[in-house]
Length: 425
Image (cartoon, rainbow, N blue to C red; front, side):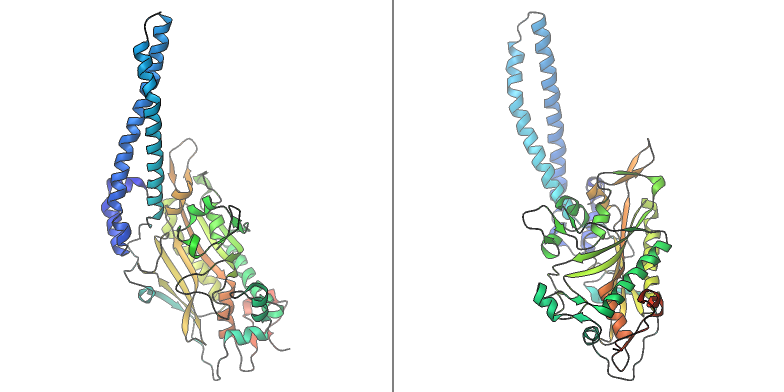
């Protein structure tokens, strides 16, 4: 959520940001917000004056009665004040709610290094790593390979409908090995393992993400104020809601591991069959709370952490700087890592790394400061370390052999009980 002071003092920054985002609807709302805020401040001051007047008149009545004097004039005046105050309180309360709803839907201010572009085709490549593999045989799809080593899509559909999968045997062990490797990588970098609940309430969720995600992404638990989490980022972000953190404790670095649940309603939809885009998957996520002056340095560190995971897996990838037309509401800047998918002959998204600056923290009312000193809104950042199902696609495609077997990445062999090749049985 943007700071209301920005609308009061520098509305041109917001207008320029919305023009970059090509968001004409919200651009038209800027004047509405400024006008409503100005009226709210005036009405709030009038209400405070009425309350002060009520207290003053009440004291005058008491004083006159003690002196045995006529207080009828003051009593008559006091009788009219409750109605005026009640009407003022109603207007102020409704205006506050309307103003908050406006602010909750305004997107974050983009960093100056975010490239301008209309959609994901105009994201800018930052760097590449790894050598694109060459094969002298016809490549199998990851679905063919996965089914051979223990994935079952058809029975998952029987159990849960489309958009789900079951992993058994070797591929299940490989999936867990990828997760554990990513967790260990982050722990060595000073991150604390965080295992969240799989459901959180609407109020903290509203502080974390774009409100349109409630319809497009989240699963609502019927008859309960609970939503299944779309990523462990969300409960980690809300963990310190309505708290002030001592700056000596910052940065706080979490490595979240959870199952994630997504409707995936929108342009991409879900895979008809496969592992890449599903309703349920496992993910290791980085999350950091930090001082505002440290967030851009930490953003670069977090994307490097994710790169270290994919370098360890020896999967070719490139890093892209997400453009204005593809970045979404919450992030001020976002990098993606896209891993090479040989069967598809293209890169596919496997990591998103965002600096959300003070946007989430202001919505969640999370501050930092020194004991007895001034408090300020801190910054939050999030980044995938690895979404295991997507990493599986890259591993199966890049490490496949002509006979349909799959070599295990060297770094995962210790997590596989020494198993080096899958699909030999």
